[in-house]
Image (cartoon, rainbow, N blue to C red; front, side, top):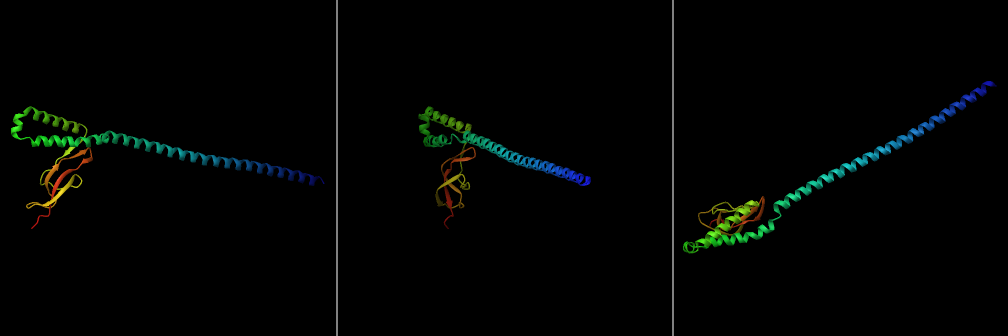
Length: 187
């Protein structure tokens, strides 16, 4: 009978070891699950961080672009409002006859000087004059056709008259040059 007790004792040890092993495996399994959950949370937080970092960089770039555009083109409304002043002064100078230039030489010289100063201010702020010549090819990106007329000795699309100069602010069109364009000449 001594042997059955010994076997029972061994069975109890095996059962205890199995229970202990099951507990350890359960702890390891719980730790592994917790570790997996922490890794998933870490990956999610890393993704959120990278997205936030990319958003911040994009916002910085948009802000820089908006600042540069405001710096370059912020005065475009004022510049556009100054163009009729330029046009009027230019017409006044062109309308002055030789006789008027002799009588009012000081006045004409003052208007010419003012005109030069206005062009210098335009140039300083990135405003360039678009001055097409008669015979140039019509460019719809720079010119506005005020009228079309068949003129003998010209090709269709050639500028036949310049009514007003155009202006560019850096790379943007402030006002197109106003021109007359030749249509296909009548035969």
